[in-house]
Length: 147
Image (cartoon, rainbow, N blue to C red; front, side):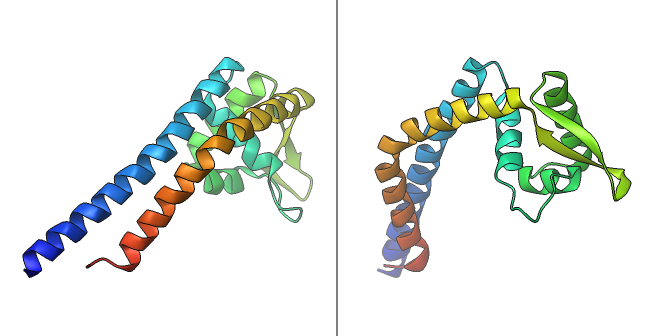
């Protein structure tokens, strides 16, 4: 009996996790496609989001961006280099520490970001309910592992 309960519980958790992952991947796939339609890779869109959504007391240093993007420092430098070459961001020396670079959106980057954010919110609206349901189901599976 216990093995049967454990198997059902494992199956329920697996299904919940798989559904949540599917709902997230649907949105992420849309996001990648939408970014590419605007002529930029999804990672550059994500970079612009991180810069634009920074807390007022924070500066967009490479270290901060790497942490928020979950990238290594050198990968973030390369990402910023590419975004700078395409005119989405600009990099300035930190006036208090010339070893640090601070990254800002350009007006072109801000325009593209605003367009993509609006498109993402329109796409996310009908996905919210299935995504929230999948998250609730996953939360239930985590809180009640054996049933």
